[in-house]
Image (cartoon, rainbow, N blue to C red):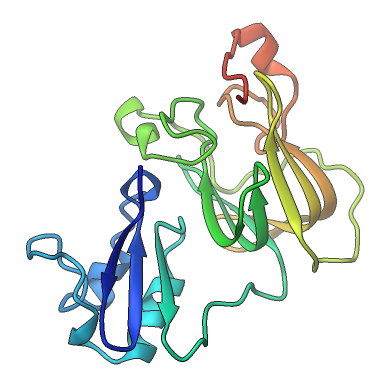
Length: 211
C-alpha cells in the first residue's frame, strides 16, 4: 500500500495503513494532530514540529514517519532492540533494513503467520485470537556484547525471520532475554521456543516463500 503524506509548513508526516497495528499512541498523545474522525486525519499544523516528531517516533510499527524541513530527521537508536509483544508482533527499533529495502528505524513484524502484509504485522493476530506470551523464557543461543550497527531482516523461504546484526532481544516489558549477533525468529506462530524458531514451521506446513 502506498504511503500517504500530510504536509505542514515545517514537517511532512507519512502514513502507511498496511503497517499500522493500531496502538493509538498518536491519537492519545496528540488528538488535534492525529484524529481518525477528521479529514485529513493528520494535521501537522495543529502542534509544534517537536511535538509531532516526538509522537511519530513513538509509533512502534513505523507506519508513521516524518521529514522535517530543517533536515533534522529521525535517527536510529544507539541500541538495536527487538521486543516480543504479548499476543502480538515482534517490534524492532534500530538501524534496520527489511528484505534489502531502505533503512528504517521502527518496524512491527508478524509472528502469528497470518499477516497479509508479511513480513510486517497487519494486526491479523487480533482477529485470529493469537495467544502467546510476551514474557518468554526461551532457550537462547550464546550472547554477544555488541548492540550497535546495521541489522538486516529477511524471510527464509517458508521459514523463520533471519535477523543478522547486533540486537538486544527483550520481553514486552523490557526485560532482556539475550544480546545476539544473529537470530532466527519464529513467524509461523507454532514454535515451542518462541520467539526463536525451532523448526515447527515444517510440521505445520507453513507456506510463505519470500518472493
